[in-house]
Amino acid sequence: MSKEVSLEKIVSLAKRRGFIFPGSEVYGGLSGTWDYGPLGVLLKQKLIDLWKDYFVYQRSDMLMVDSAILMNSKVWQASGHTETFTDPLVECQNCHNRFRADKIDLSTCPHCSKKNTFGVAKNFNLMFQTLIGPNSNEDQVLEIDKKALLNLINQQSGKVLKFKLNNFTVQANSNLVYLRPETAQGIFTNFKNIIDSIYPDLPFGLAQHGKAFRNEISPRDFVFRSREFEQLEIEYFIQANDWQKYFDQWINLIQDWYQLIGLKKESIHLLEVSGDDLAHYSKRTIDFEYDFPIGRQELSGLAYRTNFDLTNIANFSNKNVDYRDKKTNEVFIPHVIEPSFGIERMIMAVITEAYTEEIMEDQSTRVVLKLSKQLAPIKVVVSPLLKNNQLLVDKALDLFNSLKKALKFVLYDDNGNIGKRYRRADEIGTPYCVTVDFQSLEDQTVTVRDRDTTNQERVDINNLIAYLN
Ligand code: ATP
Image 1 (tube, rainbow, N blue to C red):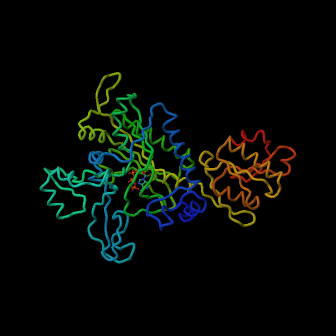
Image 2 (cartoon, protein in one colour):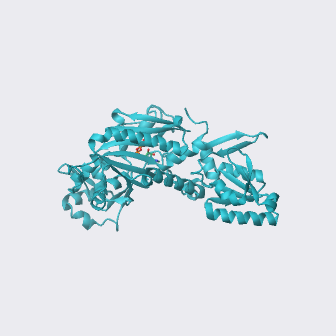
Protein backbone atom coordinates (compact mmCIF):
# COMPACT_ATOMS: atom_id res chain seq x y z
CA MET A 1 0.00 0.00 0.00
CA SER A 2 1.39 3.42 -0.95
CA LYS A 3 0.75 6.49 1.14
CA GLU A 4 -1.96 8.72 -0.19
CA VAL A 5 0.30 11.73 -0.04
CA SER A 6 2.23 12.15 -3.26
CA LEU A 7 5.95 12.67 -3.49
CA GLU A 8 5.33 15.97 -5.29
CA LYS A 9 3.46 17.36 -2.28
CA ILE A 10 6.31 16.47 0.05
CA VAL A 11 9.00 17.86 -2.23
CA SER A 12 6.99 21.03 -2.70
CA LEU A 13 6.38 21.55 1.03
CA ALA A 14 10.03 20.83 1.79
CA LYS A 15 11.15 23.51 -0.63
CA ARG A 16 8.41 26.08 0.03
CA ARG A 17 8.97 26.08 3.78
CA GLY A 18 12.74 25.79 3.87
CA PHE A 19 13.30 22.17 4.82
CA ILE A 20 15.20 20.77 1.82
CA PHE A 21 16.31 22.39 -1.44
CA PRO A 22 17.83 20.83 -4.58
CA GLY A 23 21.64 21.10 -4.34
CA SER A 24 23.42 23.88 -6.32
CA GLU A 25 20.05 25.04 -7.60
CA VAL A 26 21.18 28.49 -8.78
CA TYR A 27 23.53 26.79 -11.21
CA GLY A 28 20.94 24.36 -12.52
CA GLY A 29 21.45 21.80 -9.76
CA LEU A 30 23.67 18.76 -9.26
CA SER A 31 21.85 15.48 -9.54
CA GLY A 32 21.67 13.44 -6.34
CA THR A 33 22.59 16.30 -3.98
CA TRP A 34 20.34 18.21 -1.58
CA ASP A 35 20.77 21.19 0.73
CA TYR A 36 19.06 21.57 4.08
CA GLY A 37 17.38 24.88 4.90
CA PRO A 38 16.75 26.26 8.40
CA LEU A 39 13.83 23.94 9.26
CA GLY A 40 15.46 20.92 7.62
CA VAL A 41 18.62 21.45 9.67
CA LEU A 42 16.54 21.45 12.86
CA LEU A 43 14.50 18.38 11.92
CA LYS A 44 17.61 16.45 10.90
CA GLN A 45 19.51 17.44 14.04
CA LYS A 46 16.61 16.50 16.30
CA LEU A 47 16.34 13.11 14.61
CA ILE A 48 20.06 12.51 15.03
CA ASP A 49 19.98 13.61 18.68
CA LEU A 50 17.03 11.35 19.40
CA TRP A 51 18.76 8.44 17.66
CA LYS A 52 21.92 8.96 19.70
CA ASP A 53 19.92 9.27 22.86
CA TYR A 54 17.95 6.07 22.20
CA PHE A 55 20.69 3.86 20.78
CA VAL A 56 23.77 5.21 22.58
CA TYR A 57 23.38 7.55 25.56
CA GLN A 58 20.61 5.64 27.33
CA ARG A 59 22.61 2.41 27.16
CA SER A 60 25.75 1.35 28.98
CA ASP A 61 27.05 -0.93 26.22
CA MET A 62 27.37 1.64 23.43
CA LEU A 63 30.15 4.07 22.45
CA MET A 64 30.59 6.45 19.54
CA VAL A 65 33.42 7.02 17.09
CA ASP A 66 33.81 9.68 14.42
CA SER A 67 36.27 8.56 11.76
CA ALA A 68 37.66 10.46 8.78
CA ILE A 69 35.73 10.38 5.51
CA LEU A 70 38.94 9.87 3.55
CA MET A 71 40.63 6.60 4.48
CA ASN A 72 43.59 4.56 3.31
CA SER A 73 42.48 2.76 0.14
CA LYS A 74 43.45 -0.56 1.69
CA VAL A 75 40.28 -0.23 3.79
CA TRP A 76 38.17 -0.66 0.65
CA GLN A 77 40.35 -3.41 -0.76
CA ALA A 78 40.11 -5.41 2.47
CA SER A 79 36.35 -4.86 2.77
CA GLY A 80 35.76 -5.97 -0.81
CA HIS A 81 34.33 -2.62 -1.91
CA THR A 82 36.87 -1.99 -4.71
CA GLU A 83 35.89 -5.30 -6.30
CA THR A 84 32.25 -5.79 -5.42
CA PHE A 85 30.58 -2.51 -4.45
CA THR A 86 28.92 -2.32 -7.84
CA ASP A 87 25.52 -1.98 -9.45
CA PRO A 88 24.69 -3.46 -12.86
CA LEU A 89 24.77 -0.69 -15.48
CA VAL A 90 23.10 -0.83 -18.91
CA GLU A 91 23.15 1.74 -21.68
CA CYS A 92 20.44 2.23 -24.28
CA GLN A 93 22.05 1.92 -27.72
CA ASN A 94 19.48 4.35 -29.11
CA CYS A 95 19.41 7.35 -26.72
CA HIS A 96 22.59 6.46 -24.76
CA ASN A 97 20.96 7.03 -21.39
CA ARG A 98 22.26 4.79 -18.62
CA PHE A 99 20.21 2.86 -16.07
CA ARG A 100 20.51 0.39 -13.23
CA ALA A 101 19.71 -2.95 -14.84
CA ASP A 102 18.01 -4.33 -11.73
CA LYS A 103 15.64 -1.36 -11.41
CA ILE A 104 14.07 -1.23 -14.90
CA ASP A 105 12.23 -3.46 -17.35
CA LEU A 106 15.02 -4.25 -19.82
CA SER A 107 12.70 -4.90 -22.75
CA THR A 108 11.93 -1.18 -23.27
CA CYS A 109 14.08 1.89 -22.66
CA PRO A 110 12.40 4.04 -19.95
CA HIS A 111 13.73 7.18 -21.65
CA CYS A 112 13.16 6.79 -25.42
CA SER A 113 10.72 3.82 -25.26
CA LYS A 114 12.59 1.92 -27.97
CA LYS A 115 12.51 -1.86 -27.55
CA ASN A 116 15.47 -4.20 -27.07
CA THR A 117 18.20 -1.57 -27.05
CA PHE A 118 20.13 -2.76 -24.01
CA GLY A 119 23.27 -4.88 -24.21
CA VAL A 120 24.87 -6.88 -21.43
CA ALA A 121 25.02 -5.14 -18.03
CA LYS A 122 28.44 -3.98 -16.82
CA ASN A 123 29.43 -3.75 -13.16
CA PHE A 124 29.70 -0.10 -12.19
CA ASN A 125 31.58 0.69 -8.98
CA LEU A 126 29.68 3.21 -6.85
CA MET A 127 32.66 4.66 -4.99
CA PHE A 128 33.66 8.24 -5.75
CA GLN A 129 37.38 8.61 -6.32
CA THR A 130 39.63 11.55 -5.66
CA LEU A 131 43.34 12.23 -5.42
CA ILE A 132 45.01 13.04 -2.15
CA GLY A 133 47.95 15.44 -1.82
CA PRO A 134 49.56 17.33 -4.71
CA ASN A 135 48.62 15.89 -8.10
CA SER A 136 50.06 12.46 -8.81
CA ASN A 137 53.60 12.88 -10.04
CA GLU A 138 55.06 10.37 -12.39
CA ASP A 139 58.27 9.76 -10.42
CA GLN A 140 56.24 8.33 -7.59
CA VAL A 141 54.27 6.08 -9.90
CA LEU A 142 57.30 4.89 -11.82
CA GLU A 143 58.93 3.48 -8.70
CA ILE A 144 56.36 0.66 -8.64
CA ASP A 145 57.27 -0.94 -11.97
CA LYS A 146 59.04 1.34 -14.36
CA LYS A 147 58.80 -0.67 -17.56
CA ALA A 148 55.22 -1.88 -17.32
CA LEU A 149 54.02 1.51 -16.28
CA LEU A 150 55.89 3.38 -18.99
CA ASN A 151 54.17 1.22 -21.59
CA LEU A 152 50.78 1.72 -20.03
CA ILE A 153 51.21 5.44 -19.52
CA ASN A 154 52.20 5.83 -23.18
CA GLN A 155 49.11 3.94 -24.26
CA GLN A 156 46.56 5.46 -21.92
CA SER A 157 47.85 8.72 -20.57
CA GLY A 158 45.52 10.57 -18.23
CA LYS A 159 43.85 7.49 -16.76
CA VAL A 160 44.15 5.88 -13.38
CA LEU A 161 45.87 2.62 -14.21
CA LYS A 162 45.07 -0.79 -12.83
CA PHE A 163 47.11 -3.83 -13.84
CA LYS A 164 47.48 -7.40 -12.71
CA LEU A 165 50.74 -8.47 -11.11
CA ASN A 166 51.00 -12.05 -9.85
CA ASN A 167 47.22 -12.18 -9.64
CA PHE A 168 46.95 -9.02 -7.52
CA THR A 169 45.26 -6.00 -8.99
CA VAL A 170 47.66 -3.11 -8.54
CA GLN A 171 46.46 0.46 -8.52
CA ALA A 172 49.23 2.42 -10.17
CA ASN A 173 48.10 5.78 -8.87
CA SER A 174 49.21 5.85 -5.26
CA ASN A 175 47.35 9.11 -4.59
CA LEU A 176 43.94 7.56 -5.25
CA VAL A 177 41.49 7.62 -2.35
CA TYR A 178 37.75 7.06 -2.12
CA LEU A 179 34.99 9.03 -0.45
CA ARG A 180 33.59 6.49 2.00
CA PRO A 181 30.46 4.74 0.67
CA GLU A 182 29.44 3.72 4.21
CA THR A 183 30.38 4.77 7.73
CA ALA A 184 30.69 1.15 8.93
CA GLN A 185 34.31 0.61 7.83
CA GLY A 186 35.43 3.57 9.95
CA ILE A 187 34.08 1.65 12.92
CA PHE A 188 35.86 -1.61 12.06
CA THR A 189 39.17 0.14 11.42
CA ASN A 190 38.96 1.67 14.92
CA PHE A 191 38.08 -1.58 16.66
CA LYS A 192 41.69 -2.16 17.71
CA ASN A 193 42.01 1.41 18.99
CA ILE A 194 38.93 0.96 21.13
CA ILE A 195 40.15 -2.35 22.56
CA ASP A 196 43.61 -0.89 23.28
CA SER A 197 42.28 2.32 24.83
CA ILE A 198 38.99 1.40 26.47
CA TYR A 199 38.61 -2.42 26.37
CA PRO A 200 34.84 -2.54 26.90
CA ASP A 201 33.09 -5.68 28.11
CA LEU A 202 31.56 -7.81 25.37
CA PRO A 203 28.94 -7.42 24.01
CA PHE A 204 29.42 -3.78 23.18
CA GLY A 205 28.52 -1.56 20.27
CA LEU A 206 30.29 1.21 18.39
CA ALA A 207 28.11 3.76 16.64
CA GLN A 208 28.99 6.32 14.04
CA HIS A 209 27.07 9.12 12.37
CA GLY A 210 28.31 10.89 9.28
CA LYS A 211 28.35 11.47 5.56
CA ALA A 212 28.53 8.68 3.00
CA PHE A 213 28.90 9.01 -0.76
CA ARG A 214 27.73 6.72 -3.54
CA ASN A 215 27.90 7.48 -7.23
CA GLU A 216 24.38 6.13 -7.76
CA ILE A 217 23.59 5.38 -11.40
CA SER A 218 20.16 7.00 -11.21
CA PRO A 219 19.67 9.19 -8.13
CA ARG A 220 15.95 9.87 -7.74
CA ASP A 221 12.83 10.06 -5.64
CA PHE A 222 13.75 13.19 -3.71
CA VAL A 223 16.39 12.38 -1.06
CA PHE A 224 15.62 8.64 -1.15
CA ARG A 225 18.50 7.82 -3.47
CA SER A 226 21.10 10.57 -3.14
CA ARG A 227 24.76 10.60 -4.08
CA GLU A 228 25.72 12.29 -0.82
CA PHE A 229 23.80 11.29 2.30
CA GLU A 230 24.19 10.60 6.02
CA GLN A 231 24.25 7.29 7.80
CA LEU A 232 23.86 6.25 11.39
CA GLU A 233 25.47 2.84 11.81
CA ILE A 234 26.19 0.51 14.68
CA GLU A 235 28.52 -2.47 14.88
CA TYR A 236 27.44 -4.53 17.85
CA PHE A 237 30.27 -6.90 18.79
CA ILE A 238 29.28 -10.29 20.20
CA GLN A 239 30.37 -13.89 20.70
CA ALA A 240 29.54 -15.95 17.60
CA ASN A 241 27.23 -18.29 19.52
CA ASP A 242 25.00 -15.46 20.69
CA TRP A 243 24.17 -14.02 17.29
CA GLN A 244 20.57 -15.18 17.04
CA LYS A 245 19.69 -13.85 20.48
CA TYR A 246 21.11 -10.40 19.71
CA PHE A 247 19.73 -10.33 16.19
CA ASP A 248 16.23 -10.76 17.63
CA GLN A 249 16.90 -8.11 20.27
CA TRP A 250 17.91 -5.64 17.57
CA ILE A 251 14.79 -6.34 15.54
CA ASN A 252 12.68 -5.32 18.55
CA LEU A 253 14.80 -2.27 19.33
CA ILE A 254 14.53 -1.02 15.77
CA GLN A 255 10.76 -1.55 15.68
CA ASP A 256 10.42 0.44 18.91
CA TRP A 257 12.63 3.17 17.48
CA TYR A 258 10.37 3.63 14.48
CA GLN A 259 7.39 3.97 16.77
CA LEU A 260 9.27 6.50 18.85
CA ILE A 261 9.76 8.75 15.81
CA GLY A 262 6.09 8.48 14.94
CA LEU A 263 6.03 5.82 12.20
CA LYS A 264 3.01 3.56 12.49
CA LYS A 265 3.72 -0.11 13.10
CA GLU A 266 1.57 -1.06 10.11
CA SER A 267 3.74 1.08 7.81
CA ILE A 268 6.94 -0.82 8.64
CA HIS A 269 7.55 -4.19 6.98
CA LEU A 270 10.35 -6.64 7.64
CA LEU A 271 11.81 -8.21 4.52
CA GLU A 272 13.97 -11.29 5.01
CA VAL A 273 16.72 -10.91 2.40
CA SER A 274 17.59 -14.22 0.79
CA GLY A 275 19.34 -15.91 -2.12
CA ASP A 276 21.32 -13.72 -4.49
CA ASP A 277 20.24 -10.55 -2.69
CA LEU A 278 22.08 -11.59 0.48
CA ALA A 279 25.58 -10.06 0.56
CA HIS A 280 28.36 -12.67 0.58
CA TYR A 281 29.51 -11.67 4.09
CA SER A 282 26.04 -11.78 5.63
CA LYS A 283 24.48 -14.83 7.28
CA ARG A 284 21.17 -13.02 7.76
CA THR A 285 19.84 -9.64 6.67
CA ILE A 286 16.51 -7.98 7.29
CA ASP A 287 15.46 -4.87 5.40
CA PHE A 288 13.07 -2.62 7.29
CA GLU A 289 10.79 -1.31 4.60
CA TYR A 290 8.39 1.61 4.77
CA ASP A 291 5.34 2.54 2.69
CA PHE A 292 6.85 5.61 1.02
CA PRO A 293 4.84 7.63 -1.52
CA ILE A 294 7.03 5.85 -4.11
CA GLY A 295 5.93 2.44 -2.81
CA ARG A 296 7.32 0.01 -0.27
CA GLN A 297 11.07 0.55 -0.10
CA GLU A 298 14.07 -0.02 2.17
CA LEU A 299 14.25 2.38 5.09
CA SER A 300 17.12 0.72 6.96
CA GLY A 301 18.93 -2.59 7.23
CA LEU A 302 19.97 -5.10 9.90
CA ALA A 303 22.69 -7.60 9.08
CA TYR A 304 24.64 -10.33 10.83
CA ARG A 305 28.05 -9.81 9.23
CA THR A 306 29.84 -12.62 11.15
CA ASN A 307 33.51 -11.66 11.74
CA PHE A 308 34.07 -11.05 8.04
CA ASP A 309 35.29 -7.45 8.35
CA LEU A 310 37.57 -7.80 11.37
CA THR A 311 39.11 -10.96 9.89
CA ASN A 312 39.82 -9.14 6.64
CA ILE A 313 41.43 -6.28 8.54
CA ALA A 314 43.62 -8.75 10.43
CA ASN A 315 44.68 -10.38 7.14
CA PHE A 316 45.31 -7.19 5.18
CA SER A 317 46.99 -5.21 7.95
CA ASN A 318 48.84 -8.01 9.76
CA LYS A 319 47.57 -6.49 13.00
CA ASN A 320 45.96 -8.38 15.80
CA VAL A 321 42.26 -7.61 16.21
CA ASP A 322 41.53 -10.34 18.76
CA TYR A 323 39.35 -9.79 21.78
CA ARG A 324 40.35 -11.48 25.07
CA ASP A 325 37.39 -12.42 27.20
CA LYS A 326 37.87 -10.81 30.62
CA LYS A 327 36.56 -13.82 32.57
CA THR A 328 37.64 -16.87 30.57
CA ASN A 329 40.72 -15.41 28.83
CA GLU A 330 39.44 -16.96 25.65
CA VAL A 331 40.82 -15.13 22.62
CA PHE A 332 38.73 -14.67 19.46
CA ILE A 333 37.65 -12.25 16.75
CA PRO A 334 34.16 -11.00 17.68
CA HIS A 335 31.19 -11.28 15.35
CA VAL A 336 28.89 -8.34 14.65
CA ILE A 337 25.27 -7.41 14.25
CA GLU A 338 24.94 -4.25 12.14
CA PRO A 339 21.89 -1.97 12.25
CA SER A 340 22.32 0.58 9.48
CA PHE A 341 20.14 3.69 9.11
CA GLY A 342 20.05 6.50 6.56
CA ILE A 343 18.94 9.94 7.75
CA GLU A 344 17.47 11.02 4.42
CA ARG A 345 15.12 8.04 4.23
CA MET A 346 14.10 8.52 7.87
CA ILE A 347 13.31 12.20 7.25
CA MET A 348 11.30 11.25 4.18
CA ALA A 349 9.37 8.61 6.16
CA VAL A 350 8.74 10.96 9.09
CA ILE A 351 7.40 13.71 6.81
CA THR A 352 5.29 11.21 4.84
CA GLU A 353 3.75 9.86 8.04
CA ALA A 354 3.15 13.32 9.48
CA TYR A 355 1.72 14.95 6.34
CA THR A 356 -2.04 15.45 6.70
CA GLU A 357 -4.63 17.42 4.77
CA GLU A 358 -7.88 18.36 6.48
CA ILE A 359 -10.92 19.96 4.88
CA MET A 360 -12.13 22.75 7.15
CA GLU A 361 -15.66 24.06 7.71
CA ASP A 362 -15.10 26.83 5.17
CA GLN A 363 -14.02 24.12 2.65
CA SER A 364 -10.40 25.29 2.70
CA THR A 365 -7.63 22.70 3.06
CA ARG A 366 -5.49 22.71 6.17
CA VAL A 367 -2.05 21.12 5.67
CA VAL A 368 -0.64 19.87 8.98
CA LEU A 369 2.63 18.10 9.69
CA LYS A 370 1.73 15.99 12.70
CA LEU A 371 5.33 15.56 13.78
CA SER A 372 6.05 14.23 17.25
CA LYS A 373 6.79 17.03 19.70
CA GLN A 374 10.36 15.84 20.02
CA LEU A 375 10.98 16.23 16.28
CA ALA A 376 9.01 19.36 15.42
CA PRO A 377 11.63 21.92 14.30
CA ILE A 378 9.73 24.80 15.94
CA LYS A 379 8.00 24.18 19.23
CA VAL A 380 6.03 27.40 19.67
CA VAL A 381 5.02 30.39 17.55
CA VAL A 382 4.33 33.59 19.49
CA SER A 383 2.07 36.32 18.00
CA PRO A 384 0.39 39.56 19.03
CA LEU A 385 -3.30 39.47 18.05
CA LEU A 386 -2.81 42.74 16.17
CA LYS A 387 0.42 43.91 14.64
CA ASN A 388 -0.39 47.61 14.90
CA ASN A 389 -1.13 47.76 18.64
CA GLN A 390 2.06 48.67 20.45
CA LEU A 391 0.92 47.33 23.83
CA LEU A 392 0.17 43.92 22.33
CA VAL A 393 3.40 43.91 20.33
CA ASP A 394 5.55 44.85 23.36
CA LYS A 395 3.99 42.15 25.50
CA ALA A 396 4.28 39.53 22.74
CA LEU A 397 7.94 40.40 22.16
CA ASP A 398 8.66 40.16 25.90
CA LEU A 399 7.02 36.78 26.01
CA PHE A 400 8.84 35.64 22.86
CA ASN A 401 12.21 36.60 24.36
CA SER A 402 11.63 34.69 27.57
CA LEU A 403 10.25 31.61 25.77
CA LYS A 404 13.15 31.68 23.32
CA LYS A 405 15.61 31.53 26.24
CA ALA A 406 13.77 28.66 27.90
CA LEU A 407 12.66 26.58 24.91
CA LYS A 408 15.05 27.69 22.10
CA PHE A 409 12.91 26.57 19.17
CA VAL A 410 10.49 29.48 19.22
CA LEU A 411 9.40 31.81 16.39
CA TYR A 412 7.84 35.27 16.44
CA ASP A 413 5.25 35.77 13.69
CA ASP A 414 3.13 38.87 13.15
CA ASN A 415 2.50 38.51 9.41
CA GLY A 416 -1.05 38.49 8.09
CA ASN A 417 -4.03 37.66 10.25
CA ILE A 418 -4.05 35.14 13.07
CA GLY A 419 -5.73 32.44 10.93
CA LYS A 420 -2.94 32.61 8.35
CA ARG A 421 -0.33 32.42 11.08
CA TYR A 422 -1.92 29.26 12.45
CA ARG A 423 -1.89 27.66 8.99
CA ARG A 424 1.74 28.53 8.46
CA ALA A 425 2.64 27.04 11.84
CA ASP A 426 0.59 23.87 11.09
CA GLU A 427 2.38 23.33 7.81
CA ILE A 428 5.78 23.09 9.50
CA GLY A 429 4.46 20.96 12.35
CA THR A 430 4.58 23.52 15.19
CA PRO A 431 2.69 21.96 18.12
CA TYR A 432 1.64 25.25 19.81
CA CYS A 433 0.74 28.81 18.87
CA VAL A 434 0.63 31.38 21.65
CA THR A 435 -1.35 34.58 21.07
CA VAL A 436 -1.18 37.75 23.15
CA ASP A 437 -4.56 39.52 23.03
CA PHE A 438 -6.32 42.32 24.94
CA GLN A 439 -7.26 40.08 27.83
CA SER A 440 -3.53 39.27 28.23
CA LEU A 441 -2.93 42.93 29.09
CA GLU A 442 -5.41 42.68 31.95
CA ASP A 443 -5.05 39.21 33.47
CA GLN A 444 -1.63 37.89 32.35
CA THR A 445 -3.10 34.99 30.40
CA VAL A 446 -2.57 34.07 26.75
CA THR A 447 -4.35 31.71 24.36
CA VAL A 448 -2.51 28.52 23.51
CA ARG A 449 -3.75 26.81 20.39
CA ASP A 450 -3.06 23.10 19.85
CA ARG A 451 -1.90 22.05 16.36
CA ASP A 452 -3.72 18.72 16.20
CA THR A 453 -7.06 19.58 17.81
CA THR A 454 -7.03 23.32 16.94
CA ASN A 455 -8.53 23.81 20.43
CA GLN A 456 -7.57 26.96 22.27
CA GLU A 457 -6.99 27.28 25.99
CA ARG A 458 -6.25 30.25 28.21
CA VAL A 459 -3.04 29.74 30.13
CA ASP A 460 -1.44 31.91 32.80
CA ILE A 461 1.85 33.32 31.51
CA ASN A 462 3.57 32.20 34.71
CA ASN A 463 2.60 28.59 33.98
CA LEU A 464 3.26 28.75 30.27
CA ILE A 465 6.67 27.05 30.12
CA ALA A 466 5.50 24.16 32.26
CA TYR A 467 2.36 23.87 30.12
CA LEU A 468 4.34 23.81 26.85
CA ASN A 469 6.78 21.24 28.18
P1 ATP B 1 19.48 0.22 -1.78
O1 ATP B 1 19.27 -1.26 -1.98
O2 ATP B 1 18.21 1.00 -1.67
O3 ATP B 1 20.46 0.81 -2.75
P2 ATP B 1 21.39 -0.51 0.14
O4 ATP B 1 20.90 -1.86 0.53
O5 ATP B 1 22.52 -0.41 -0.82
O6 ATP B 1 20.16 0.39 -0.37
P3 ATP B 1 22.80 -0.14 2.55
O7 ATP B 1 24.11 -0.34 1.90
O8 ATP B 1 22.22 -1.25 3.36
O9 ATP B 1 21.73 0.30 1.43
O10 ATP B 1 22.84 1.21 3.37
C1 ATP B 1 22.24 1.35 4.64
C2 ATP B 1 21.25 2.50 4.64
O11 ATP B 1 21.83 3.69 4.12
C3 ATP B 1 20.02 2.25 3.76
O12 ATP B 1 19.05 1.47 4.45
C4 ATP B 1 19.53 3.66 3.52
O13 ATP B 1 18.79 4.15 4.63
C5 ATP B 1 20.82 4.44 3.45
N1 ATP B 1 21.20 4.64 2.03
C6 ATP B 1 21.90 3.82 1.25
N2 ATP B 1 22.06 4.33 0.02
C7 ATP B 1 21.46 5.55 0.04
C8 ATP B 1 21.31 6.59 -0.91
N3 ATP B 1 21.83 6.50 -2.13
N4 ATP B 1 20.63 7.71 -0.55
C9 ATP B 1 20.11 7.84 0.69
N5 ATP B 1 20.23 6.88 1.63
C10 ATP B 1 20.90 5.75 1.33
